[in-house]
Length: 505
Image (tube, rainbow, N blue to C red):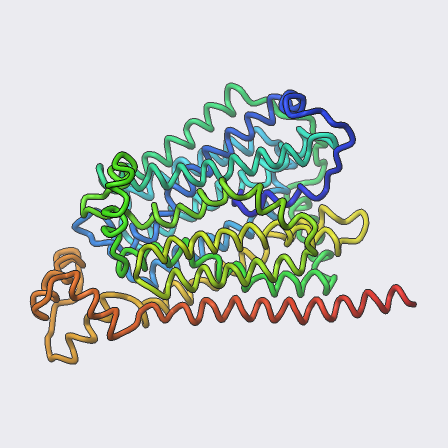
């Protein structure tokens, strides 16, 4: 499940007995700890690959990457991930029918096959297909993982249990990119896919030899009936306009959020000089600086973006305590505003220190808004339909992923793509260079362009930044966030007025 998804259950539990910290740890059955460990490794695999996927898809072929266009990258990442977040509506019903253990085995086989062969194929269609297999496997895993935790906890320990589970999400989400960034720099791109496959293999061993399925109510419906019933339930929830409007508004937040993983790594790769960060860190923390150092003398983009997960691990409890008594809508709007400032700062400048500051600010906004989103869904849920309404949580994430292709693909390629901008300048000077192919790579193009312009590559990058302003894409990303806040303000005003009328009636 995504890091965001595990706020869903926290609001639904009330501790009836103070077990103490050690008592809480001992209160969970083995199935809970196995599920938590599997979550860690599944997220390790997913984020370990996803954090570098944009770079792999568009990187130069002479470095083992695929050299796709930004539009092709946007299609692969957006459409497949959008499908992934929609499928749990169906895969959850399948898992209830066939059981959790068979579902996990199927999920891990699909994930393992998908991850491994993604690193073996190179055509657009083949990569799309393999990534789609990964998405189906992840969609099989998502509802089962959270269901196991639900079945393994009770009113005494549910809140604490999902907190532990969420911590596992972030540990996997942090260490996956940390290792994939280091490994791909030293051993090439193939090792990233092997690492992801190996993490899934660990999970397959755990489920085959150590996992015992917790008690569950077996569905007597057929596969078709189970899926249809699940879709009808979702449609029933969406018939409530309070919920549907909220979900539509929150598409804007997730659309903005996605740019951290879809667009920012490529932006850093093309425009931000990370050697400055290494040179700053080395005199202070030489061991840490050398661990992160890449072969160009800087720090890989995925390691910069991965600080979002690090900040969440370190600050989540503090932020959660601060916003504990905030009204959900107020916290959501405040969090989104903070996130806008962070994401805008990350794209506004090519100074790596401001990029890091922007990621920190964005993480604070993420931690402020996400928990309150699920909390607000709970507050507007009719009594007895809380779980049904919670099932709609991933719908805006799915829609936002489909829409993300427009920003990270079309818009980025038109206004921020380094190759396109350099070609514009070359054309203005009546200089022609060949199209990029497997034989004439992106690195060849950069070297030849710098030579024709009589600049070093760093000088060429600075010139293009100053004259063509690729960072202006932040206007669009921030604008989407601001529209989301406006939507929430109007929504809150209308809903508050409606609830007051209902109370007075």
